[in-house]
Length: 274
Image (cartoon, rainbow, N blue to C red; front, top):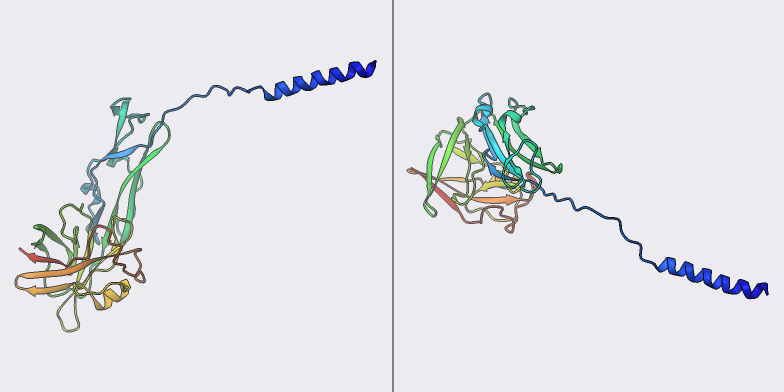
């Protein structure tokens, strides 16, 4: 008799456990929090500033408002305007608390960041390059304005020291934002001009070098410096000519590839002094 009672009891208990196991467990309520990553809407600072040793004026050269960051979802503490009432925030020169060394030679980075109310950051900044004088500048002064007839672009070459110059658009295309590079004019062993444009950082995060207009592809940066420098092709009027080559990194051992051109194609660029 006990067995007859036990079997139905076990069956009922098993069915109860099976029903409980198959029953849907409801998720707890969740709240979706809207957020976003802020972005730089206005950039007033140049991508880089170049100075000669002892000539730095970076503080006065920087604008008071370096950039304006925007986030229309959560906004910024202390922000203003827009959908949230605090969408935008100014990134100010006065926000800079730590300045890089602007005395010693070389490149230095200056960076500032702002965080939105969701703790996502946006960053802006610039590069500072301190160039030194050279002991043997070439005999020809290169500073002035140069026309690239193919595009109508006027390239300004600015003097830093004798034989040391800054150019900011070596490809001569009006659609490309300016970015400063150093161009050197050394005196050769025969006393003539000898242009040198060593491999330098570019806005693409790779390396740029100016080379002889007849230079071949696929050599190292070091080989171009030694054998294929940009040229002065005429002295009257003063005419400069080169190709703009891009490399995967800023290294003298880097090899040029015609498939990596950053902002520029491989056409010869010719500039005539005005």
